[in-house]
Length: 187
Image 1 (cartoon, rainbow, N blue to C red):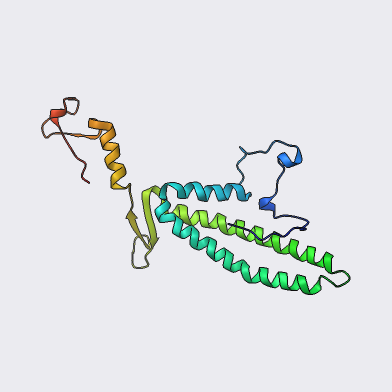
Image 2: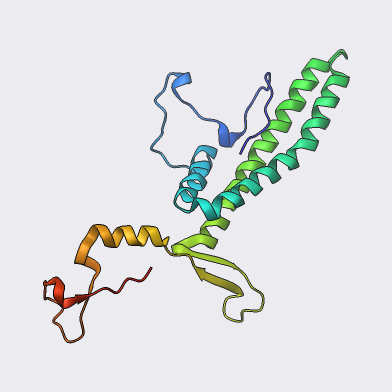
């Protein structure tokens, strides 16, 4: 997700900050840190890749919601900045106002994206799609197994040959002859 920032701000959000090549130091790219937007945004992205059809609409809705949540504040901040800029201490006040807005927005987006990752993980874990269902007395949820797409399952069976075949009735499981096997995969 994007975070509003203007040229001239004097500080960036803590979740976006850190030392790196621009500071003459090696970036700690292998040091996982949930307090950094880079890692949380990568967690969401990497979680979405194998379930794109189910997860992308939720990500898009979340990004759109964040955009709309900031739009009114951005418009007001820019209008106020334009009104006070020409006052004696206007430029300093505008910089302080833009900095405060950015830092606050950056941290709010980071915290929301952390929670969003948790929501995605809880809902789509283990090839399930788990949604609230207040009528279910067991978990208060509806659990649907999404599994793998049929074309993917067929490819696995086609590429692995008899590896996934089930022994025919009365046959020894250690028998390797394909005539002793029956298919157990239905598409």
